[in-house]
Image (cartoon, rainbow, N blue to C red; front, side, top):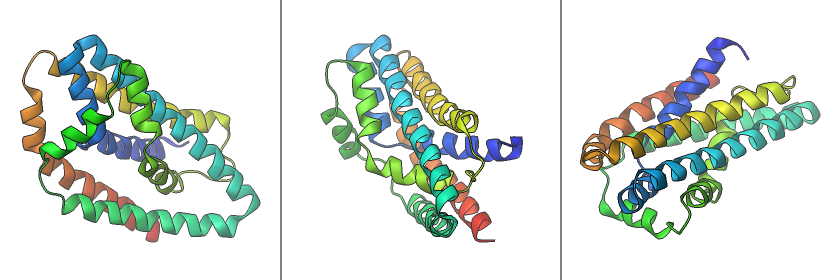
Length: 202
């Protein structure tokens, strides 16, 4: 994978990771209730789930390209449309409410790593997002090494972000700040997603 493509992929993964949602609520809840260690384990579990999704998606798309290029073209443009829809949705998003935190709390259980993994792995929108995203970067020559890079990029960035959230949250009132900045985080993510979708169409 060329560095420019990797950088674009990493940028989208960063935007996806920092966007507020149920996953962030779970990490925050577990950190507040169970302490720093519990929050970090939740973050690592979530990153593992995201990385596994990324690997399965990259390998699956490469197989589709090799056997049916026309189908892949349809997936590619469908993915671009989905990214554009996500971008518009993010631009029109309203500030976070307590409902999101409550939804995240319902997913909490006993083990932080298991909770984080399941929050990621049981999220069907994550699978759709990776199909849309990776269809812009995967080609017929994509091998295990490149798929591994995608897995480590997506899972690593996700885990690092939520570990950072857990570490900082355990030392200060970060929740209020994140909620206050959620609109701007959504705006940035929306613009990045629209830019990528526009690039694919051109």
